[in-house]
Length: 639
Ligand code: AHR
Image 1 (spheres, rainbow, N blue to C red):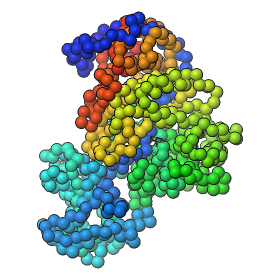
Image 2 (image 1 turned 90 degrees about the vertical axis):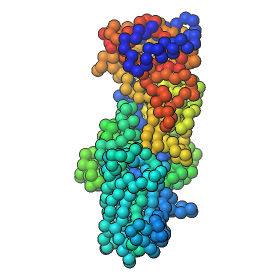
Image 3 (image 1 turned 30 degrees about the vertical axis):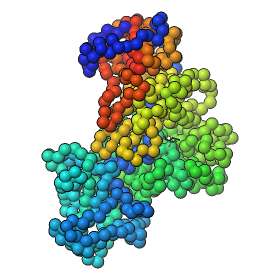
């Protein structure tokens, strides 16, 4: 039994009420859990828990990438120029049209031409942008704006940039930008809000002029303050969520996002680096256009900001709709691209692509240990993957023998020199399937490649996991920790979802957000708990007599001198245990509990903290009860 020494968040009355409601134990006799914390049986990989994201569910554009202007490069669809409207105040007369013949760069060779036939002070004309499901605006905040512009034959005068409330029409912040003749130039401005506004996403950006004339615009941008104040950086709230996960790596740039529907739509890193005006963007597979504002360098800086390293996936010549590059001569340019990409990440000033990274503003090379070749190449029915993998692996090994290579399908690779170090296994399962999978790796041979569980998730909740999913995930994580001599790295997927209508392509994503706020799902909390309380070795242990929806992990941290005991009760009945813990001290343990009343219970954007961890300090006794639908993480000091 636990005796509560201090309880931080749950009032006693609530605790007692919860105890009064719990159903009877799973079986009358308590299960026996015996752990010898002094006896380590297998190592736990120091990089077991990582992150994986890609451009899906508006994870980057309209998400992590802090740009507030949606469609900043004026891409036109059959129904017009998405998210842009014409402003005609009073009796102003104006129109706009995409000009396919003129733009500020080779990367952005088009623009939007605003033609103003009639305008005057009070009768302004111009453009408005609605943002990605609104524009989040907070009090006392400076927003950095910019655009490229070229005056037409008649000068329409200075541009007024304004943030305007959709609900009240109030101008929240304003700046004036003088334009000059002489071709394309970039203009910068800032918009600073006052103290008297409420945080809200119900705002838009307006750019207007007050004289007749014409002006062409491109790359219209507006950024809030970003994480660690990076120019062209990331949303601070989402980065803080990730920072809470104690992850060790970021798998980038994605799964399907790496591949593209067609070969031309692949993730071509060379088009994602350098000045924004030189980045054309590309069609991403999850239905929408990617600006590539969050390009390769920004991915790497994201890693740097979280003090983690990239697991770099390189494009391997297969596109999602089935097209592929034949191994041999045709594949050579793609292999060269992969070599160049690794050089961009790790190279010094004496290398071509290292020098390019330095020119882009990052002198220091980034750390790297793992390179993945392709994504889910079991989909390639042409049979070309073994030879494609081999060609990449031989070239990468020759130049970079120090890196571990990851294969994405269980195929036979002919050459001894090209054997993979790890295989990437993916699991998307229902809660019931996840519970059944928990012993999958226990008896897998330890003689072949190690394992990267590069995508895994228990999926039933939408848009984010419910508590049943969190229980499935927690059960799965006990299995990954137990088998971490084999499973060296792992990453849940997908990580992010913009919960606005129409933004999601894939249900069950770890962290939900809209333009203004974020929330953590129960699975997020489960994962953060596991990753923040994991040792470097698994302790010798045996369990007898527990229900088949009960799971545990016992790892020992040699540096903290701590046993991290995770107990997962995914049953609707409590599980009583007799604990026999050897090698632990009698000092109080820290208990963190994640609990909900049902599988269906969940968090949401409107109820973000319905389920969250509760911490307490406890004195452990041999008789211990784990309530129904509960994840417990105990930090128990060693002797
Ligand atoms: O995580 C969503 C998708 O699932 C990934 O893009 C792909 O690799 C997998 O099929």
